[in-house]
Image (cartoon, rainbow, N blue to C red; front, side, top):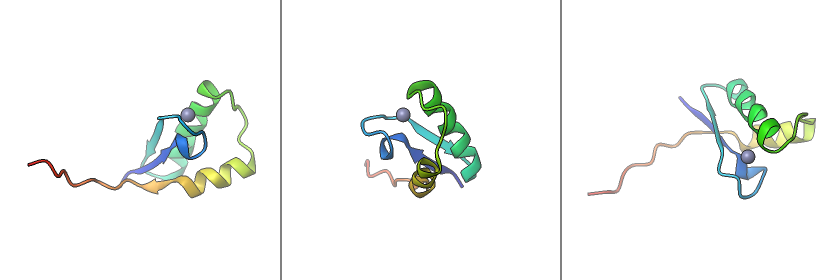
Length: 66
Ligand SMILES: [Zn+2]
């Protein structure tokens, strides 16, 4: 099972997607991303709460292509 966090849920317009097999992995990847790309070195409890809410299981889209 893959968990995904879209950065745009927290930073509108950013297309980055953090992925992992568990919340910790996704958060670690996301923390790395916001530190390097958004200069957000520290994740406050508030941000962390938003991050946790934004993490969801990857939904595999059924390809509608014929
Ligand atoms: Zn981002």
